[in-house]
Image (cartoon, rainbow, N blue to C red):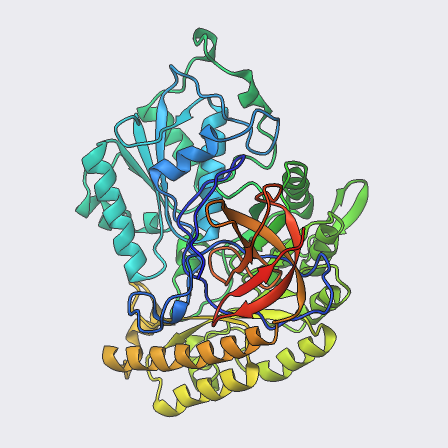
Length: 536
């Protein structure tokens, strides 16, 4: 297995990449721009490693430490790009930033850091050098809650002046009971409240009195500062969710669906493209419901009328000529039309769909949308429309009331569905979730045993599908370069950053750079990753 390392270029924030999750089910005889790439990760682990069983990554976390958050500013180029805010002001106050949770939370962090930078604040690289620390928390599952509380405690002990925001901010009383020293607590996507709280405790710098003030701060454009590598970025199209799944508290944390007008989304997408972004990852709580709350209102962008609607947005994003990857899509019937765009090579043929289970009885208890849908028939239809489509999903095992028969239904479904990328959670109670009050909770030992059986089965499916790629030609996107080993760590169209597999490309030359597309030949495969050669 190749050794991986990280090389930071442009605005790349380098973080240890988690082990990937699954394999790709799409092979093409020739490469096209829709045969994209995947991000770096550590080599696949043995299935006996209980710390990361079966190399899976169920949750798409994008944690950033205080040091990593600062790197995006200090490593930016001097060009006027989406991340142009690199000129530190020596006398300006410094704000430390810790960001926890999913890509949606990461986008919130990016927005807050952008606004603070516009106000003239610097981003601190350590607790000691910060005038104040902002901790953006996650409250999705109990382990995330504990991680957030621990991060708050660390920031208080190492700095003393802490503002808390994010999903866990909904539990302000809990936070203050454990950490009474926090200065302020806000909820998720409360940008203005955070900026106001920061200014209250650390007044905005007076630029007119600062001889070192760099006017390039004023050039930060609509895309803002990003905490991702410069060649890909998350684009959040809506906030909140209208569903009331019994295991989830996201609506109570982030509210009901609120879509961004399509012209607003497209302006940011264009700014990101102009900044050099090669791949947009479209995120929300329910991507396929985009625009429902706006009644699909028409806006104008580039002089053309556009409806704020999922399909219309996908069409418009295709016109940018860069990779567009869809996450958090529910399997509604109208998604079929978007799959047609994928079949026409107008979007990456990749869908991230949280199926969560296969037993209709359990799906009904979960109150999942479209729980009565025949998802196997829908997947079959999608593959007929777009044979190259890759489907990633997450599942919950051990949900209250799940019997062995329900679980076997899930295993049988997985065998027939043959999904490309799969992650799983064992069910855990989250404070405020309706499912906590359901009867017949599954013992922890049974949950774990089912989880391991589930992931072992998917590991076999993944290995089989990746073997089918050997000898094929793919286009990949370079995420990292291990210059010592002469290896490029890449992603194909089948791989999303930090949750899926990798394509390791051997014997690269010095001309190969991060963010570059390569056409490679697949020589070998493991359970989760591909190994390729590049002729230059």
